[in-house]
Image (cartoon, rainbow, N blue to C red):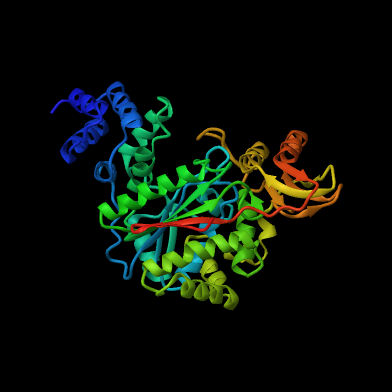
Length: 442
């Protein structure tokens, strides 16, 4: 088998065999296939695409290229949740303990933030003492005993994907749906989940900017799940404005606590209940999404979700007492309000600009090597549809580097579009995609 023949075959729009895809991934992982040939193949895929079977084969080849987590010793159906990333996406911090409190084991590997997109691992590390590093044995034992564990991704999880993603980033082949879908799903499958709920963001702060592209990506990932024997559901959710009311690591921990105590922003609560309901259904803990939502709401009302959050944090070495007063982890020099320059109504908030503003304060990374400040960020006081008066606070900046204040303030103001007439906010949930089809809500 020759790499050049595989490149030519895909260049001509032909279907690759399972063996050809496996040969390509194994060779690229062990270094016998050079970057320039893999670049040519990736560009051929970019233009010619892959069918569902090819994409599933690529996913499994990458999942098999490194370590795979065995969760079979943990009782029950293990359901993972993955978000394609956004601004203020605090869902894992709420969902992991809430779904675990419903009796569904949550064994999750998460990543760090890069650019304007926050990372779950960074948020959890804002809690003093919290450890994101557990051995596989510790990880499975904690999920068995506590029902939930969230750790950083293993160094040798899907090494083929790490190499290929880095190559795609510098060869203009990132925006290929088969390559995006297989990249995401290879990590989920290697992490050992029985079933997967996907939160595919759409809008200005998302990777996929249009609803059509978001649905195509969701369909590709659900199709992979079907091909490889995993139950999979995808939710298309809005990221035209930040989700919730906080952007920044410690601030999002505070927001998660408020949400688990029933006092969180309604948009974050709705997205969490939607995702969590499908997790419960896939795990066999509810017959319908509506029944599952009721169960999750009761776990919030009773305090069981918040208690599970404290148990989970303590199990991973964190100081769970700070969750009773999360302001203790907001170690900043000052809180600076950003005030409206006119009367009107908030028509939109450009999510990506808010994410960049938080990064400018030090809450995010410009490169993988960047150091972040876990305390800084933005607390949004006005969201789309809200009325606002001139001089009223749109957002609070939690600041340590005072030299960045004016530039960040301008960035936040530019992100807000205020109009004279009342407006309706965008929907939060646009569609649900299963193996049987697409259910649109707009």
